[in-house]
Amino acid sequence: MQSIRFSGFCSLGKMITAKPGKTPIQVLHEYGMKTKNIPVYECERSDVQVHVPTFTFRVTVGDITCTGEGTSKKLAKHRAAEAAINILKANASICFAVPDPLMPDPSKQPKNQLNPIGSLQELAIHHGWRLPEYTLSQEGGPAHKREYTTICRLESFMETGKGASKKQAKRNAAEKFLAKFSNISPENHISLTNVVGHSLGCTWHSLRNSPGEKINLLKRSLLSLPNTDYIQLLSEIAKEQGFSITYLDIEELSANGQYQCLAELSTSPITVCHGSGISCGNAQSDAAHNALQYLKIIAERK
Image (tube, rainbow, N blue to C red; front, side, top):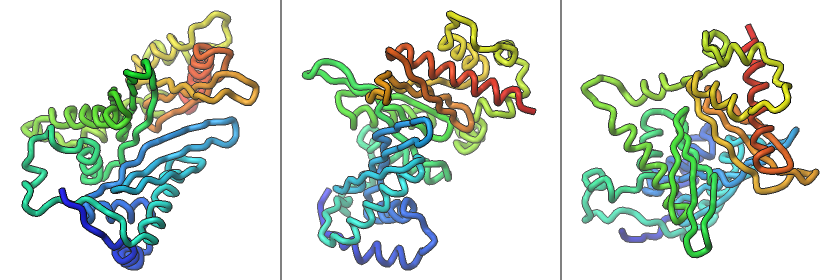
């Protein structure tokens, strides 16, 4: 790779003028494609309070890193992209790494030498999917041997990656996706678009019309019996209806000093419910309880 000086103001200015209807996310992506520096978005924080949820996204393009905050993931990503565009427009001496013309074509290099994060993002764009989202879900281990766990979501799919650094965890999650998609045989005439389109799994329509024992038991349940294991009950329904559950512990305590947790269900659309309690376990149980109440309401609607 060699580094060159790239005039951010000139190219971005022309792109914005030529395509006034484009969103900052679209403009930044096209700019990244031209400079071989595809923007990568990562969810840094998601605080879901009773009335005002707040999301923070970080975008990295070349040597530039910016964050954006908003009441939705889309708005946070929009603002992060907008901040990056403003920096690129103002700084005409930003250094970008571009492929050396004498180097081999990246598409012909061994897969293990490619950037899986960029490859997955290109795959999503090629098929018209939403961009992958990365969320740091866990950080642990002693100081000399940290381990990070990152969740990557693409449409209704979800994969986790672990590594000694946040970047490595993201790479591993992206690699799992690429491996999953590469296993689809072209002889079967099944496109990746069809795979994603038919992987919606649990939808509100399927919930309302499901003959499943667990979901119909939920419809009749009051969800107020003492000593009920809500986490187990939600897990059984998830297994029956074909969706997964991810519990995301929030580091900050609530205003009244309680632990907080988010339960994310890979339904279509995705469901996120908040829970709180005197311990992490209680917060997870409360989040599962709230998720069950929500599913019950949806399943009972006609």
